[in-house]
Amino acid sequence: MANLAVNDPAGEWHSQTRDCVKTRFNQLADINAGNVEKLRVAWTFSGAPQNGHEAAPLVLGDTM
Image 1 (cartoon, rainbow, N blue to C red):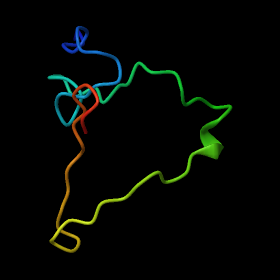
Image 2: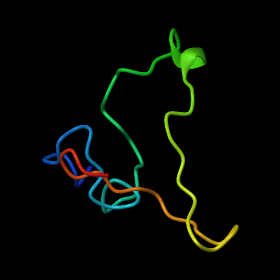
Image 3: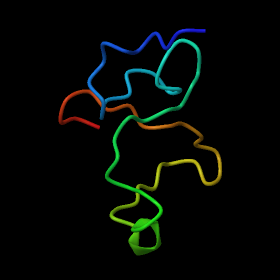
């Protein structure tokens, strides 16, 4: 099945699963086996309901 998000910019997720076929694939190569251990939490967000908010962020341009 073809990736239906091939025209979306590589770092953008216009839907919660990236594309219509739910690949959740990111073409960016900034994170790899050689640097993954250096990842740290950059920010957190606490919504109103405790343990009740379940959603992936959408990224459009420079807006999350």
